[in-house]
Image (cartoon, rainbow, N blue to C red; front, side, top):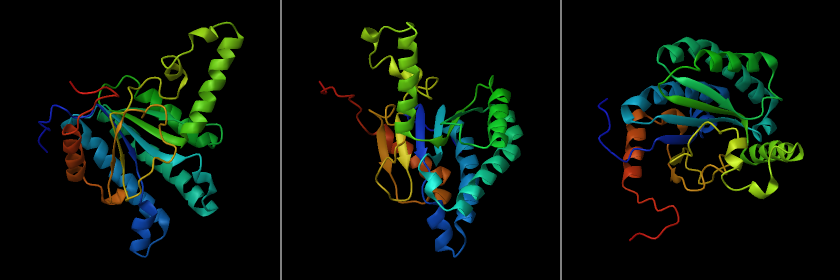
Length: 240
């Protein structure tokens, strides 16, 4: 695909990948079939990012609330994450993708955490697309954990509480290494943010689309990016 000519392409796109289960159910298949289809779509969208001018891509893979799903679905998702990492590690590295994970790893099984750590280490020097995967992630949980770390530094005398500002907190968030997202996309027709990047998305543009995630094509991705370029971002200011 030709490179996007839009000079206002977002640097950082975050995606709430919704609709895998419904995609499968519409076809009379188990929900996990939809999750497998969704994983394939991730690969295609990551590969599209360089030509579309997207430098940072953050995807919401599993939330802190998703543990309430059936044991069968949760176990299947955990197996899918491990399979995806094992299968895609080398190709991600070959394509110079930098991979990092955000979220609380304490509840994840050690075998999965080891795969995550190894993928991060292997791709640490890559300079292509920066892919961030939110796994066992919740925005409120992230802010709570960041606050605990900040409070710990205050207690140790490393940080003066009078110096805490809106520029301080991002250094304690899981996403300390990322610019704030310019655009947040949610697929499947739901118009809510579901506890995703609450602090970081304060001035992000949002796009809620009806397409289910497994059907979200590179062409539709390009259309969403094009619409973003037509928006006027004021960040609270009044246009002159």
